[in-house]
Image (cartoon, rainbow, N blue to C red):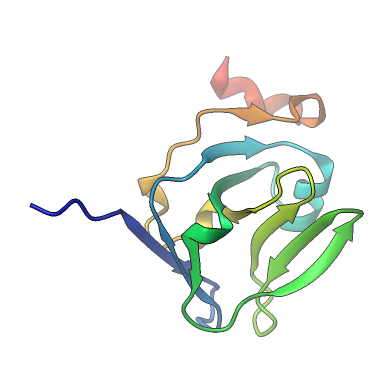
Length: 127
């Protein structure tokens, strides 16, 4: 039997931006930094990271906003859904917000980063 790589699909709320990932993610983690909190409006953001070569855009690619030096955040130009993060600190990678996948339950975060910025209650469930 042929071993086929696992694929995942996702996109924005209105469907204008759609993507597919192939293979296992490089990481799944919760980011508590102030920048992610502002960009998403959430207490923290859960990101699923893939190498650029693992990502294929099925419809339009997201529009990009340079949110800070060396950081590019992708969003749907039609509905505004925040989708991606790419930064100079992680060259060759694109990180997707977990909620933009069709099956976000396929991923489980195994780390919390920038915990020094975390809201006090946001880490309570993790001990």
